[in-house]
Length: 273
Length: 273
Image (cartoon, rainbow over all chains, first blue to last red; front, side, top):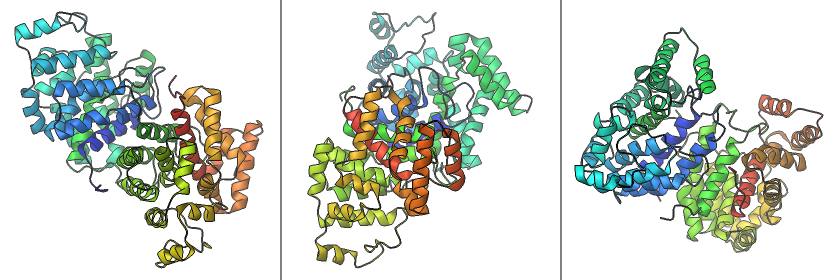
């Protein structure tokens, strides 16, 4: 046992832990805020429970879809609902590939079976499905449709990219993940940078998880409020309190932040300097 | 991969996570309080990093002293100093034995080599050594002394039991661990019980970690203040603020609380009901 080596699995777990602890993150569960049914401890338990699936990804055993499904099912051992489904969509290929470039190769080579496994995982989460979505995960004929169209998991993500920013990371070469990682690496101030990086992601693009729950206008309003906080016209506390009052949680950006922290850790960023 | 089974390793990690998040715990790191050099995240990272050693314990591979040493060295990957050394002294035999009764058999059969491995781990932590301690861990002749006296790790714990309540758990059949587990099981209210159980431990016995740093009187004073909180004469917040101001952290009782949460989880207690 090499007591000093950090495995990619551990770095991913540390990224999940650091993201959820970082405070304040407007509207999201953090060190200072639980939702009634989803707590800090649910996210932390999730980061512990998922390890066997992340280890398989690190050893290259199993396919992307299968491992996203396994990680999601493992985290279902707690009662806090969906905690890291979006994060696994990013972390599993990043771990398998060992880098953004490696992940891009991996996701290009996914199969229809990966897509089916992904839909199976999706059906087990409490993630709200876009009501107009033609590829409805509750549609028993989904397998036939995917086969007919010859859609692998990359194609499914491309299909969803217009209204799902986690899916868009697959088609954009993990561009926001890269932005988050670079902000952490450039600032080089450890965990204290994380809330500021989250705010900058929030100011950059409307969170599609908010858009799915409350519509595009609500997501754009939160983006604009984040810009107001950055320019000093509004306080972070006000934005956080507004989001919590309205039940607005920018969950997709939190998933991307996890991936960004993971990449930064892989590239030598130190969280506790 | 059985996606519903909880391994003992995972239950131990969940116990470590739940303990450190639980707030308020007077004087200790918790969800609402860091020390300048030791943060919530250090304890959580420690609960992630230690997993390989806990897994070996669960598989019965390795000796008690060796695995306490390995777990301690693994958690040294963060920069927060000693986080869970005391907890591992309890968790490793409890995991190896699968229960309090099993752990009691395991610790009776430890060897001189276990004692040497333990001292090696001890030397790597920032734990303050009792200055009058004759078996000084920095004494290069410690191995000879242990061999001369024929002391195994159980004997070392018995030797330390008068001034170390974690060691005393070994000689008392994990009596305070059992008290904590029974309080959690009886109350049956999940994570919300944890701060109250900590307070009751604090009111029951003077914490020996406080005694080592500040003397017996200080430890007894904190015990008496915890009793005042229980009887409503003092507020929990006052006690917490007093401890933080004075740098008084009841670290040994936190270690025992982790072991108690672990045993409760093993016996069916549900933290997120």
